[in-house]
Length: 356
Image 1 (cartoon, helix red, strand yellow):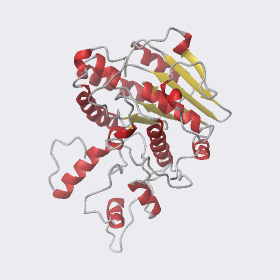
Image 2: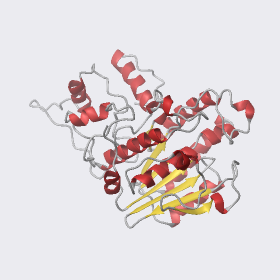
Image 3: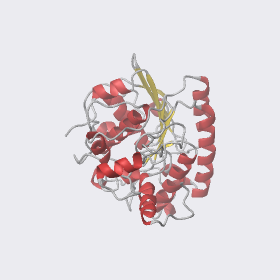
Image 4: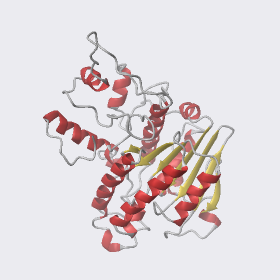
C-alpha cells in the first residue's frame, strides 16, 4: 500500500510556516506532521497519549504543559513548536474557539510571521461546556477576526470534528447531563461550522464524513483515534494543501483501508486539475459555434460515467468561493455536496439550500 512519505512532506512544506489549533486530536495531527518531516514512521501509542511533554521528536514545549501543573480543565495551555532549517510547525491547545486566549493567539499572528497554512478545529470542548448557540456566535467572531488578521494567501483549513461514540470517556466531560446527546450535538455543530467556514471563505475538510466507515480506528474512549487514522488525516491534509497550491505529488496515495479514493482515480485517468491558487482561473473553452463547451463538471461525468449533474463526493463544484480557488475536499462539507448533487440530478434542489 502506497502512503504519504517523508520526502513528499519535506518538499511540499519547504520554507512554510504551519500552525495547528485545537484539542488533543489536533495535537496528534501536529505530532504526525512533525514526525513525517523527519522520518517515515508512525506515531506510537505512548506518543499519541502523551501531553505536555518537554520535547517530542526534536520539538520544544514553548508554554504550558509540564512547565505548569497538568490538568484537564478549560484553562489548560500547551504551545509546541518544531523548527528546522526550512520548516516551522506550531501547535496551540485551545478549549474554546473564541476567547481571550484565542485573541492572544491572533495577536501572535498579527505581530509575528504570518502562517502559510492554518489547520483549525474546536468543537467538543466548546459544546460540552456551553450551549450550541454560544458556540455558533463564537464561530462567527472567530472567523471574522481570523480573516482580519491573515493575508489572503494564507491557506486556512477548518477540520470538521470526527465521529464520537455513543458512550464516551474523557476527563474534559465534566457536565454529565450533556454526555448522552453530545454525539448528536457534534453532528449539528459540524453542519453549522462547515457551512459557516465556507461562507467566510475558509476551506473545509470533512473528517466526520471521511471516517464514518473507519470506526475500527477509533480509540476505546470513543473520542480519540489510533495512529493509522492520524496518518490518514495527514494524507488528506497534505493532498488538500498540494491541490490548493497547484502541486502534483510524485505518486498517488492510498487510503487507510488500501482503496484509492475517487480523487486518485481522477488523477490516474488524467482529468484536469483545479487551477493554481496564484493564477486567475482560465476562461472556459469555446466551441466551433462560439458557444462555451461544457465545463469541468461535464468532463468529469464522462470520465467516471456519472449521471448528468452528479459529481464525486468532495469535489469542489464552485471554485469562485472562498479565499482562493481551493482543491478537492474544500468548500462545504462533502456529504452536503453529495446530497445537493443528488437533488440537482433529480431537479428538486431545496429552495432553502445555503449553497448555489
